[in-house]
Image 1 (cartoon, one colour):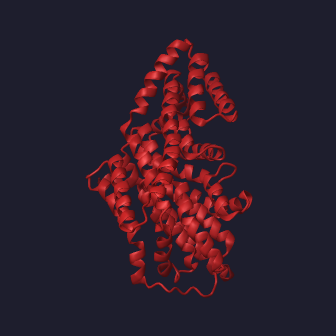
Image 2: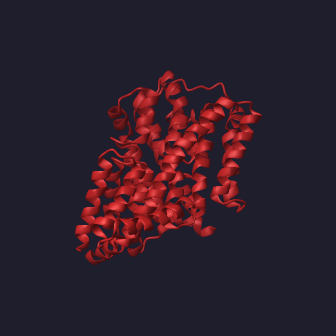
Length: 432
């Protein structure tokens, strides 16, 4: 059967099934089963036997254990006053920079991303404080919302990152090295955001209030920042010193968070119950998608789609730049409709062989892919950061999306810089 016909058939099946509104994990399983029956000339019994073995194997992956643990850590922090203290700790350091405490959105999200691993958790935790405070102090509403939407996406790139764990499992790439690869690109994006805020407020001083005084001294601010800095040190220190794997470091992070909250007398039964329930809901969603993605990957392998597409890409002799531009456009379009984890698990069986055939480093591509996924977090109609901000601010999605547009452009610029200077992602892992 013609490979182009099979590829179009699988894509049509994918769009029809997911477009029906079915849950993503169930949709992927249906597409996997249907593809092998319709295009692989297999009996339903044989397909069921193959997929059941893959289902069991994928569900027993040890690396998946890190996902619910990092989600639990973020849920516990979200329900504490750590985000409030993070804002107070950053305030005296940012008020003298052009743009003032608007930069707390960027710096706060970058720091919280280093203990959360989730874009929506980062946006919600930092936003519950900064959106109210910045409005109360007279900062421009559009700039405040837009910078938070953009900076919140750093939760996917700055380690530890749930999407990077997902990519590492699927691509069979070292998760520890992936975490290292995301550090410098994450700092680059944060610097671009802060640079834009400085330039914009320097050109339009009316966007920020004239009085930016603070009652908190820089010495006092260290005490406010201590909880987040401690958790960053514990989690990342455990990974990069070799004491713990990413999965084990997640457990260490949860333990450190619980001890910290007990020490500060913030942990109670109601809080723990809410965090556990929310963690079960979120991690069940993520892990079920991961397992069903393994089914799709297996189905694509039996149909020989990835290898044939890779050969076809090689035969038309696209330049590396054109290939990356085509993939970037492909991922931006997917980001309009799907969440980051769904994008990753659905696309990798096809795009990873193409990337490897073209000679790109899978480690580097993991960072490039996460930036593409980040773009989807701030693009309507399915931009998760936009939904989070809508709940926090009460603004319409359209207005939030317009406020996020400059930061979308800056993230595209960061992706271009990463393509031009791949060592941004590869230098730190090369030292390990």
